[in-house]
Amino acid sequence: MKKITLLLLSCLLCVIISAQTTPSLSLTAKTLQTVSGKSIEAKMGTLTVPENRNNPGSRTIDLAFVQLKSTSPTPKAPLIYLEGGPGGSSTGYADSPGALEGWFPLLQVCDLIFLDQRGTGRSGGNLRYGSEEPVPADFFADQEKALAHLHQLIQEAQPAIKKRGVDLQGYTSAESADDINDLRIAMGWEKVSLLGFSYGSHLALATIRRHEEHLENVVTIGVEGLDETFKYPLNMDIQMQKLGLMVEEDSNLAGMIPDWNELVRKALARLEANPMQVEIYDRQQKQPRTVSVGKWGLSYILRRDIGDASDLPVFPKLLHSVANGESHVLQWFVQKRWGFHGINLMSQLMDGASGASPERWAMIKAQATQSQFGAMANTGWPELYEVLEVEDLGEEFRAPLISPVRILMLSGSLDWNTPPYQAERLRFGLPNSSHIVVEHAGHEQILPQPQVQRAILTFLMGQNVKSEQISLPKMKFVPIKGFAEAANHPSSTLSQWLFHLTKTEGLEKAMASYQTSKGGVSAKWLEGEIEQVAKRLVQWRRTAEALAFFELNAKENPSSFRAHANLAEAYQESEQTQLAVTHYRKALSLNPEQPGIKDKLSALEKQ
Image (tube, rainbow, N blue to C red; front, side):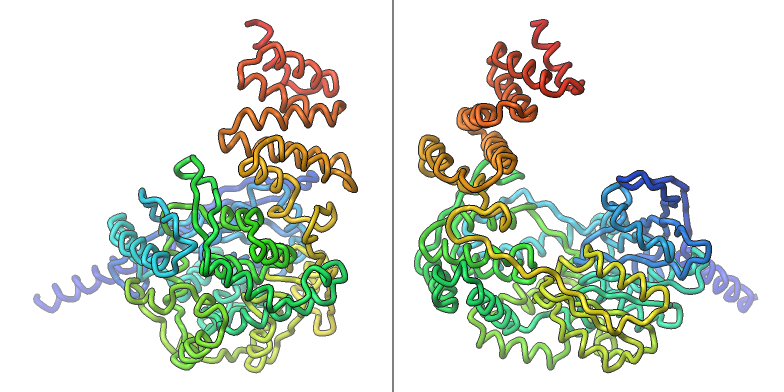
């Protein structure tokens, strides 16, 4: 009897464990449309998986995904897109007709799956923690205080997140790789292909290690190997030196920057001696704040954007302006990085679990003493292990990858985050690999390129792409002085300059500067710049100055519907009803098919 009882209990335990670990699937059909009107048959899905497969008592979480059906009668294996981060989500692409237009060509070959990895987007495992404490005003000036703030946030966040029932040990690349395989099984696919960007490439490689027999093709964009989560500090110095060589070749900058290395040193030294005060808009507190920026802050900004070719063009102007005591370009970058009061532990947990080999940590430590940016390449690491509740995946996870899986790796020649040599090193253990270096591309510029999409399509169809060569146009640097419509950047626009002048030297000086700066660019561009500065001033609650720019725009662009509609709204907000009515009528005379404007005008005329 005792044996029978034990057997029954054993069977019951197996049933319980099976119920906890067997994925369940839910699908809802939907038709989506691209911006050009192409229809896409889709399924919106959720897959229930264990949060921590190493814990038999783990709760389950739902993974959200969207399946876009292929237009081919004989599609290849479904392609699962893995977003970067860690922390990025991808199901939102299905909500955007414009984004769907960009992804549509891939449907010629196979189904496309947008998967929100665990802890991201619409999937379960919310790892975000909001703090009521504002970011310290000297966060960008004092490294010790910045890192202490980060440590404090993590120590507050972990128990708060665990109170929601979250198992922090479940957020690793190994678990996410198993999620991919569970999705494959639940959908009844014999094999899948993967397309991983940035961290998504790291996850794709982890999936190769754990489930290579179920992968048809793998494409990685910006390759982060399994022992390359943490960066070599001297790579940041090398990237800055490469940028200096490009500056030397630019005839428009040569006279302005005779010595690139000296400019970098001077900018860092100036902020180390005298941190700059810049005013930013705190979105959480909904008011302006003055913050201090020192050498640490500038190094942090450079580190965050040095691999992105959309920001690299303004680096010479940024450093030149800082070295000469000007803060308007710096202010834009600080504003860009001043956001959520709190932390999303997704990045820390996933990166911390992937870790680094002892040899890599030793090299990182040695290089930090040689780099002019110190340990900035890995901000806060490895010290974060002191406060972070994470288990290292170990050397078996990080060991050299050897696999027959067919893989295409794409790298940008200007990508510091995932430099091309990382892909070349991986290829030694991947005999069925191809590597394309996209010239003049940074970390973010590869996937949107038509040539890249054609190469990916060719590869997914089973063809050879080893001879492919892709080159983007050379980067155009933003002028050190003045404004150029063709070589532009949000930090260095006319609107940014006028906004800065209005706040620091007054409206009259800003208006005078506009008159001397408006030559050599199109009227349409100028209209957009004036509108932008006016709307930023509204956000900053500087309504009188904003109104002055709205008035300027209507005066400079008398035939513009937008200029008059914006001015009418500004007059309405300032309770100048008759002027609002006048300009609403003018806007409608220029563009009669505007029901929203008609309604506003009708409401005012009834008052």
